Length: 356
Image (cartoon, rainbow, N blue to C red; front, side, top):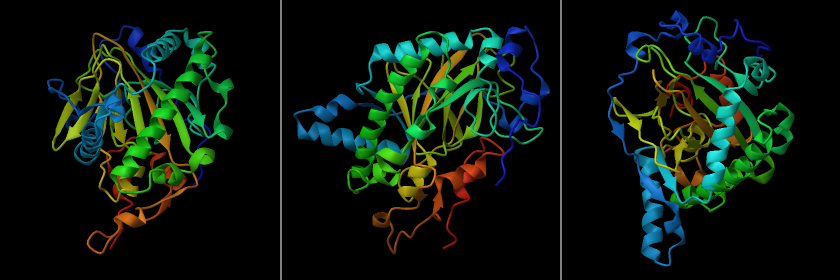
């Protein structure tokens, strides 16, 4: 599939729109009535799991914690973790330097403007469909792993401490992701290293970061910060804005707003683990609402299979009673399905369903 080397239309920087003092948002951002958010949705307490319990001397406490993670993966596709081993100070500093970056002058941020070839850098749209409705969000996207894709020269150079802090944050969150993959593997009754190895192991596994900046919006009832989608990769760890809620998770026919817990990560299952688990674990649709009074920032860390890794239901999870639900595909092939339109509900993973 050929890829565009430039965006099909002039890029609209959402933060510039917001700070211009407009009272009505441009039509490009106005969603169809059926897609508009209900801002009265109640907040939801998705499962909260204390990972410190995994170190308990009491075997029953450890087993109960592992069971809670499995239940959350099956029932919600989302959970929050505390006492996860990542420094609270590092989490706050990382969120802080990114907020500083987005408040730099536009000409400084434009030095890192991205293209649809790799999406790396400072951006304001996902997908390259001409005339598509846009989300109320600017972002910065960068690679951590594999090492051959990591290029710190493409990372922000300001604030001065930014690159050092971003690098340390990536190392620590990747360790947490590896730990969580082991737990998920064991819960699926697979070898402890199964998911890590099927993702490509230390040489091929992918890790990237998208920092989302949602400026204040004069008409938050007409648009979304991020359209409904499930994450195409493996596992996502979100560091939310602790002061402003925005993430909504689909639960049946309802959208529930996630209430962030201080110093917690929001963990969600991606499409690739749904496929590998033969749909035992759920990659759940979610979206982001925006706010008229406050800006919001969040950091989404994606832990993914290597691009050339063939992903299919684990052989151990395929039986006569539960045949393979998905056709094999590489992660690169899968991503190609969604590059054109951007976020699109659950349609992409459903397209992999086997005909049998």
